[in-house]
Length: 320
Ligand SMILES: NC(=O)c1ccc[n+]([C@@H]2O[C@H](COP(=O)([O-])OP(=O)(O)OC[C@H]3O[C@@H](n4cnc5c(N)ncnc54)[C@H](O)[C@@H]3O)[C@@H](O)[C@H]2O)c1
Ligand SMILES: [Zn+2]
Image (tube, rainbow, N blue to C red; front, side, top):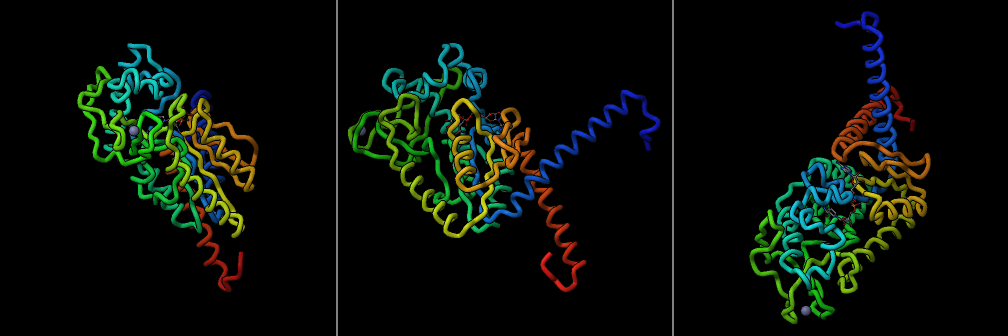
């Protein structure tokens, strides 16, 4: 066995730093586990970063976006130019090259184990809700009921007309995109509007998007309001687990912070880079989703074991 006393100063420092690092990590996990253990209800708030551990790209800055779409980098087309209804009018093959590739990718993706951990926690509570800016349908794939999800920017798995037409929103299930990934171009015919025959586009909120059909999102928002009425009615103690939410388009962070204020809830913010939190009631965990969720889940296991142990030492089963 290597003894601490036998190490040179540099090695001692490394060990001490490592112990310090482990302690901070473990105390983050413990704090988060305690918040989750005592909550009646869980709100999950997720941005693109939650998908990174499933192998999906986030679009953090032009670098992140262009790494994922080199053809668009070559043409110096950024996220705001292509995630734009104008692109469907002016360059439909390119716009559908981008969205078709994503549709296909999200269909093929298997949500990582962190989704299962979140679902397990959510199922163990009196209530749970998911708010996400992701359009990829990964929460539904992971088994969350569609009635407990608010996709604030819509879903790529649904379509709508490019024009302001009465067709509404319909499933994209019948459309199988074939994409030349190198050129980011759709090779087959784009889907068309069920009503007027114009080109159809994903039912996703884009930049400068005046024709976004928000009826699906509106229904989800109404269900969310009803869910929060239940929170108030039952005086549920809420914890917010936010992960993968960036600062450039802060819809998810804004939702978490407003919800925390309104319901006196703590935020557990999981993000390897943008983990600052607005106050000491909250905690920022500077890790990726999967690693942090696993760590918190282990800490929850330890917490439960400690509580069980206390019960065995309390033969009268009096409240501890
Ligand atoms: N999968 C999707 O549906 C998808 C993907 C990309 C972008 N978008 C859309 O683009 C917009 C971008 O906003 P955004 O804030 O969600 O994404 P973003 O790309 O701007 O930011 C991603 C965030 O995730 C963090 N992150 C990176 N790796 C992580 C990991 N392993 N675990 C946890 N966090 C990690 C980053 O630090 C960053 O803060 C949104 O409107 C969203 O709808 C959606
Ligand atoms: Zn139409």
